[in-house]
Image (cartoon, rainbow, N blue to C red; front, side):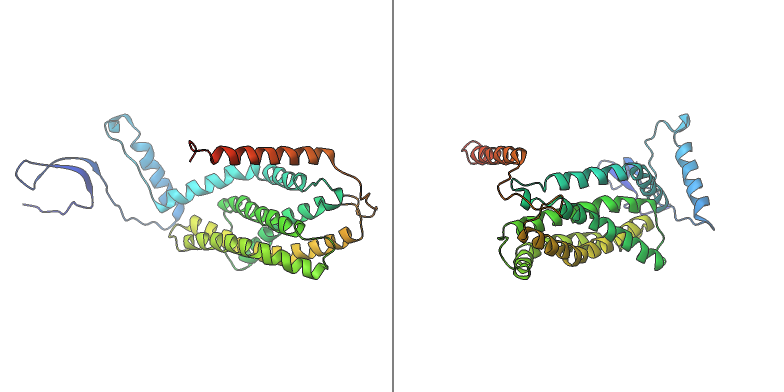
Length: 290
């Protein structure tokens, strides 16, 4: 007799009645520990296996194959497919941030501040890529996805900081206004950046090289973006506060603003927003919705 422990290899097992002998099973997992002088040879060998089990003689079986090599290749493929849409996505997001910074009072609009705030995450990504490449960490195509992630986190911080800044009176001295802004917005952007960095930090311990590289780049870029928002963007807000106190226009900063001017389009959008919020609040507080 030949005894072999198959508990880790077969699943959906049916035993012979009254015995511990296997009658049938529907799933089997075979682990192969192989190596090759070059990763390319190993990858091509695995692709050939995938091609073979799709042949007619194996159609009775449903066969799947996975390995670190195949996972890394799939991650790289996804990065290459994502890269072409990167530039357009960045432009659309920046345009959205700038447009939504327009206020009823043109003096409080912040198109340039929003534009710079949206560019800060890109600056953080470029700096992170340069530093990590200098440290010898190989760049992979999957890192392109990091641009979307860091940009979304950075833009979210811009909205939070600008909202806190606008809630404080223009007449407040700029150092005090900045202090109150960071007091209100600081905990939110700190928690979001910290949790995102920790989430990607877990992936650093992955055994898959592509996933590990992606996690390192993402974690480092989010940390750099956080400090850039605190240091660079607050400096931009200080200059913006000076402009507001001196009553200069938001778009053409060298021209004086009319204190009686109002943006009618922004007023209508604000009124619609208020109506929509009231309607939604009424709907979710009804008995049927609860």
